[in-house]
Image 1 (cartoon, rainbow, N blue to C red):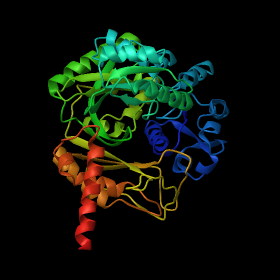
Image 2 (image 1 turned 120 degrees about the vertical axis):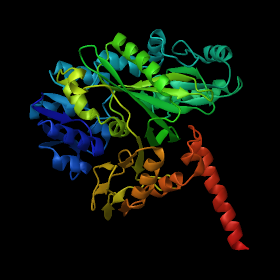
Image 3 (image 1 turned 180 degrees about the vertical axis):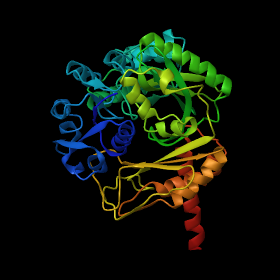
Image 4 (image 1 turned 60 degrees about the vertical axis):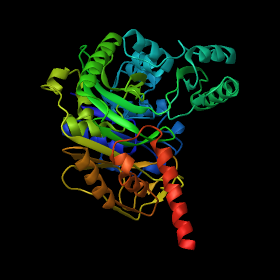
Length: 461
């Protein structure tokens, strides 16, 4: 096992990794930007090193600064968390060259799966179902028009290096395609330094379902079941569940076998997530792979009892899956996660500032992952998520009821949060009935606006 690990991240995931390391007897090193000097991940790590000013490019994304900190602290390994450098193949290569273990897949595989059009073709060869679309990068507007004619409208243009909905455009006819192609390419180039696009058939009302995997460095791969991630706003997940109501035990087993074989073929190891879209007829299609731990890994932990972050550390230290996960994987009960963001719950504008009061809920089946506290400051420079509230129950009904109770007891004062929004979602009949897809939030917010309009009219008479 490792002697000392540096966590190249911040916030709740940095604290989550520190907790896993402590349970395994591993010393930890936190890195932080100047505004994060008083963060909890700095407080609870064994050592902490400042790596730069507020801007991520000058601190958390500054590879030379991170590597220098790792060398000064004399660490054995680096855990990248999620986001930031977690899927940066160049960073993984620098770790390798510096004789520091990168806790993630090999850089060659990260690069392969991070280039989304290549990932599509890789999965297609492995018999994983993929959406109809282009065979690779689309070179021009003219080629885009030819592919769209072949695939059939509506189509969606996607950045090959994309994420978070940037570099994506939905196109419904040939007349609007050239302008949308140029818009998506420009946005992708600005966001990712790569304007290349590929194309897929667009599903109007899909569900977003992802499978969690673990793989060791000895060729063993394991599927840990799926998560439902359809409750999204602007391609950003708000609520995740495990298991999905739409995935049957037969589909779970069949897709799990296909996924295992595909990852064995490419030499994948450590944690990863295979993401799919499910259409209205229940057919499922691969869209991308995340070669890291996910924000929503907690719901899988709750229903399987497997600590995924500790598994990552043990895999990177050379252990076999058979010693980490003993016996068959069983899905027990139902788990739901709410991402609590520092945002106005109606305007969705960021809400940085000082937290004046902070009380997290507890009780059976309730888990809170956060790095915030009373008198803590939410800086304006980083992702707005400040906590994850996860509730587990014997079934979905109990998990939802527990979540409603826990949300009502979650107190954050001094800033706005999305807690009121989550409470409204959990009171919604469509959500509670499981009748949702990735367009749910659009319909939900429209219903909310209509209800508020009716209330205002009735009150003025």
